[in-house]
Image (cartoon, rainbow, N blue to C red; front, top):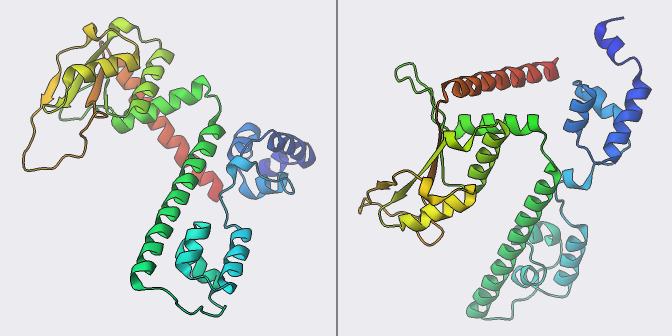
Length: 290
């Protein structure tokens, strides 16, 4: 008996565990990691017959919309009118009703344009609702983060957005720059996880000269829960009149720069952890292919 065969010998016990986890609402990835079953065929067999949790399902085309579209077409409505009524795209409507008789047009070009505009507005609204619904479902599926998960997220976040050491320019210092409040909050929580004392953290703002630097400073200070007085000197970016910036308005607060003092060792740990993540990910891909 090979090690692989021996590992999955007690299939029924594994299946009971997998079904219990599935009914708790776990995804296949979570079940795989929990049971350490990395063979996709076996993993699928373990949960066969158990429906996937609702939060893992992608939205599907609605059969009732198709039936309603056909009903409206038979009543003599045009694509634009059906779109206005149901909020579907005209390409979907065309696929659903193309075998039905084409109604006789009884409106002017101006009336047709007005209906088309209203139909497009309904479509845009429907798409936005679907977009937000998908985001809410995905957010709810995350749940609580373990310390290990937050650590890995922080390492990946820093390696994507933080300053990096180069062979030609040694910069083993942790410096994170971003304009996204969510990324800033997550990185700040990561520093808390690592026990980086407030005295080792420094902050300053980078912002265009046309914006209100003091308002931006207060914005970022509130976000990371520190006194604005601890911020360093603001870096002002000169405006190029030949370019048209889109990051303007009351919501623009520039970028927050967070630095960790005496952080050479921390930087080396981040780089090492990132190399470990890359190696583990590559190994996982190789396992799945065998």
